[in-house]
Image (cartoon, helix red, strand yellow):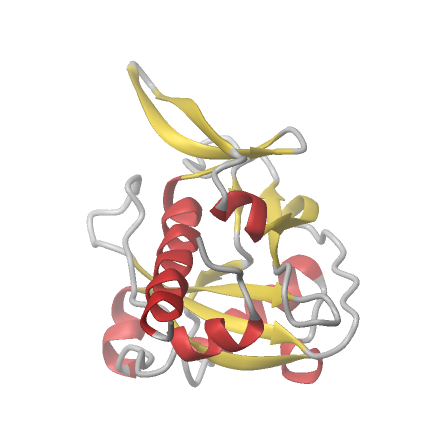
Length: 202
């Protein structure tokens, strides 16, 4: 297992572009993967939030990355991610973070819409001390240590109920929070890219 370093993340994200704007606006959402590092450029943490509970919302109360659906005024995937991050956790990523790259779009396993939703993760490095605050759509914000997740220390199983259907999914458990579903797949995908990049550089 490699050490998770800032430079390895940067190399791992090279060559992954943002989705074309027309397709993104038709069926798009974006999430911000906001990473902060210690002074040596290691021990990364990722910003997560627990969503407020809304009746009829399939993601009610779930832990997620900041983000949401594209709006007509958004000029790019990154514009959606930065706007939603400002609205949900009161951070200005244009001022206090560096856009490092993109991850391939993915689809949530659960949706109430007939049209598929493609979620585009946008990765940022914090360039200033960040003090996120939960806004109307968030109950809590917290930082998840990715080295612990990468080492397997947070592994667990989560049973999800949707009406009469019950399924068990892999998850990470941290400080009473359960990270699973799309958020877990995005972060595991990022760590897998970093692992491959680190192995190739040895």
